[in-house]
Length: 211
Image 1 (cartoon, rainbow, N blue to C red):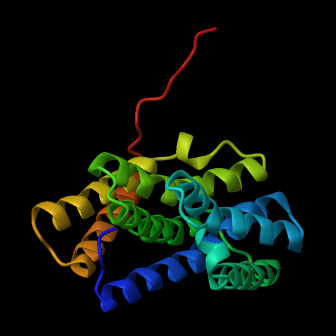
Image 2: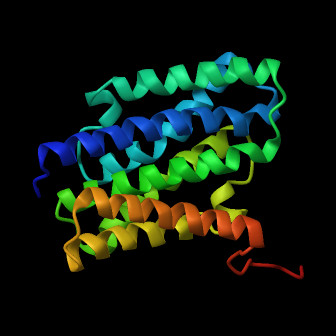
């Protein structure tokens, strides 16, 4: 595998923890429309936060990250429980979760892409590891709450993740940019594309049927 400096390793770990917190919270916010109980909220938060990275690690034949380090699970559960009790006592607009969800998408995209690179995956596979890490947890969350997955219907979601993953790979491997600097730019790409798509209702073509 490729090596990271100590500062790079700490930064990557911090991104993963931050992403777990953000997605643990947004998983509950999105699922709250279903009037779920506390256990359901925790399950939705865990699915949203840890699902994508779990699939990535299984595909890479890598120890599953939250089993190897339970801090990811602890902060996810804590974020889900805290969000559950806040949402019980304060009205939270349904679309409010979209901005932190974009942040979580960006964080997990960078983490997943770089882990793919660390495992010497070709650039296309590494970018798809970033997309899987970023979007698959939300897909699981939506399936658990009986919703059409956001990734299939919403304004540019997986596309935003993929563009950010490709930006990270290009900046690191072609431009020779430092990992931390490239990560920040890649995250900005993901958030900017996602929020721009939401603002201007930019979508990929949808499959329709006249039947």
